Length: 225
Length: 267
Image 1: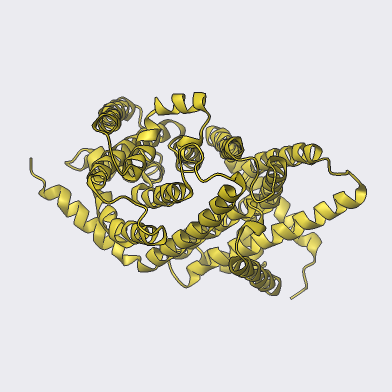
Image 2 (image 1 turned 30 degrees about the horizontal axis):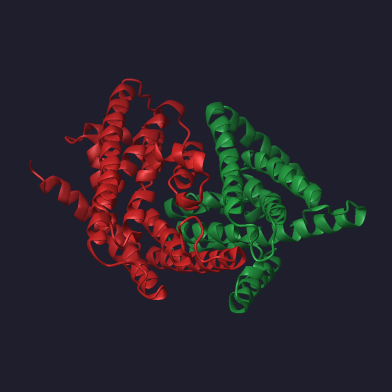
C-alpha cells in the first residue's frame, strides 16, 4: 500500500469535518445551549476561586492571580482534547453495540478516522474564555511579555495538551477490556480538574505518583502514534 | 397502595447495577483520589489562613462537608436528564409512556435499585473512612437521624429538579448542554464545590432562598451540628419539606403540559 502523507490526512479531515459541522448545524438549539453550558462551567469555576479567595488571602503562597493563571492555562491546554477527541465519549457505546466494526473496514488509519468523525465546536468557547483568563492574570501578575516567554508558553501548552490527550485516549480505550469505561473516562476527567491546582500543595508522595503517572501515559501515547 | 410493582423495579435495578462490578471499583478509586486532593488543597488553604476557624468552619468540618457532598452526589446522581433525553431521541419514551405506571414514578423507582447498591458500596465506606480519618469528628447522636431524614428529602428535591430539567429536553432535543448547565448550577449553589458558609453574605442570602441548598447544604449542615437546636433543625427540615412539595408539584405540572408537545423522531 502506498504510504499516506500528512497532506492526505489533512484533506480527509477537512472533508469529514465539513460533514460533521453540517449535521451539527441542523440542531442549532442544541449547539447554542451546549455553548452556553460550556461558558457556565467555566464561569462557575471562576466563581469558586473568587469565593475561596474572599475567605483566604493565599493558598500555600499562591495568590489569586497566580491561581487564575493556572486555571486559564489548564482551560487552554484542555481545548485540543475537548475539540478533537470528543468521539472518545461514544467509543464505549460503539464497542458495546458493535458499530465499531465499521471503522475497522475503512482503508485509513483507524484511530485517525474514528477521532476525526466528531469535532466539538463548543470547546472553542472554552478556548476563548481560557485565553481571556490567561491574559488577564498575565497582566495582573506583572509578568514580562517577551517573545521568549510567549514561546515558552506555547511549548508548555502543547506538551500539556499532549498529556491530556494521552490520558483521555487511554481511559476511553479501557472499554476494549471492560464494557463500561464511562467511569474510567469520568475519572480521567476529574483527574484533569486537579490540574488547576499547583502541585506544591500535595505531599511529596502524591506529587511523585501524579508526575510519574503522567509520564507513563505520555510515553504510551507516543508509542501508539 | 400496592408497593409491589415499585419494589420489583428496585430489585431489577439492583441486579442491573451489580452487573457492572468494575464500575464500583472505579467509583471507589475516584472517590479516594478526590479525597486526597480535597484533603491537601484545604489543608494548605487552612495553613495559609493562619486561623483554625474560617467563617465558622474548621478544617475537619470543611473536609467532611466536601467529601460527603461528593459521596452524596454519587449516591443521588441518577442521570435522569440523560435517560429522558436519550429515550426521546431513540423513541423508547413511547414504550415507557404506554406502561401502566406514571412515567415520573417509573423512572424514579427503576433507579432505587442503584440507590441501595450505591449506598452500601460507596456512601457507607466513604462515610466510615472520613469518620476514621478525622478521628470521630462527625458527631454521632440524634443528628444522624436528622441527617437521614434530610437526605430522603434531598433525594426527592434533587429528582424533581432533574425531572424538570429533563422535561426541557422535550423542547430542545439537547442533552449535553442542558445537563451540564443543571449540574454546574446545582453543584455550585448547593454548596458542593465550596461550602455555603464561605459565600459572601449577600450571595448566601440569595442562595438560601433557592431550592438547591436543600440538596447538599441542608443534610450536611445537620450532620455536622453536634448539639442541634430544635429551632434550627425544624427550620432546615421545614424548608426542605417546602421545596420537596413545591418542586414535585412543579415538575409534575410541567411534565403534564409538555407531554402534549412531544415529538418523537424515529422510534
